[in-house]
Length: 138
Image 1 (spheres, one colour):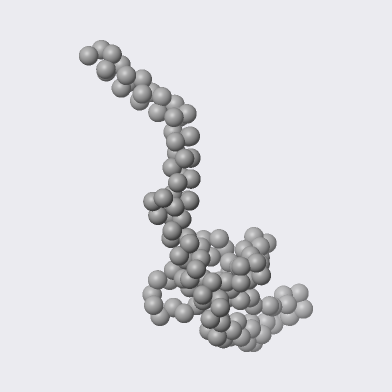
Image 2 (cartoon, rainbow, N blue to C red):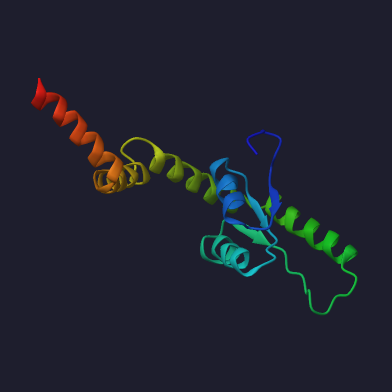
């Protein structure tokens, strides 16, 4: 997705593909299939305004081949003409990169989590005992 020729992507809105799209600043056309994907798509389209959605009536359409092509094409065209979506995706990319850098919120939280978990692990306690025995015996 990091290739400069990619101007947008049609995706199912699984969490990994959604994060990857944001990381590489690729605008999305949401085509969710299952509940979790639909929740992610709703968040991206309605709440954050960083994607456009494809509306397909799965219950009433028996043969969706032509409809799917036309609907996908419409979503892609809407995405290509949507400078506001591209702007929001770029802002989110910048925020996510900042959060993962040293001093960023994700970086700091992961460090705090490690500080809480590691001292409680049996392996860590065994290592501390071994190190302290070396200093006590010398």
